[in-house]
Length: 204
Image (cartoon, rainbow, N blue to C red; front, side, top):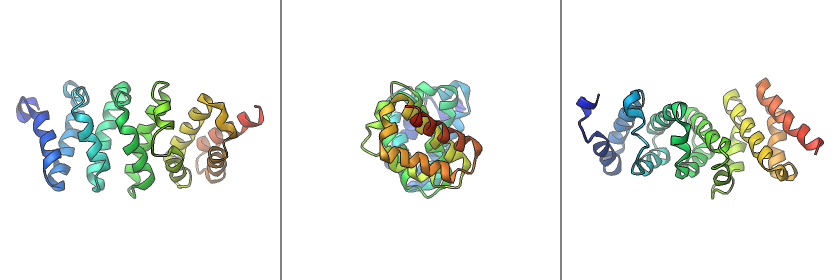
């Protein structure tokens, strides 16, 4: 694939995303996803900081297909190298916005899965909690859905948050989310995780 793309393939693709029309950006997002399947190239996608604004722009764009392709690329990177994703906390805000506002189910789901990496990392959890985009505004979109995957991701995020900061057990907005999730859970795992949080509160 390197021979097909050329030696400066990454610079060329970044230039297209930053300067061209959305239909061209969508094509490039697809190329990035193809690149993410190549073991010898995947690590290059976030190796340099120049890629961060490029991926951030694709996450924030108005085209759901481009968003999907971008998020799928980041998910592929995260599966083999989570630290490559969590090293770039600039992704947190656009991921929260995607969860809150995207109408596409796949965009919401993958954004939530990627956010979980940041919450699960002690070094980046505070960045999520203190982000200018309120995580609870995003979580309400996940807990009120009838999608079991999104509910389970929300439950895992909530559990990690309260385990890290027990004061959240007395935060009304956080506990309202937990109660809502427990009442609306369509999956046993989501119900059990939300119930575990409520048990933690009762025992505190």
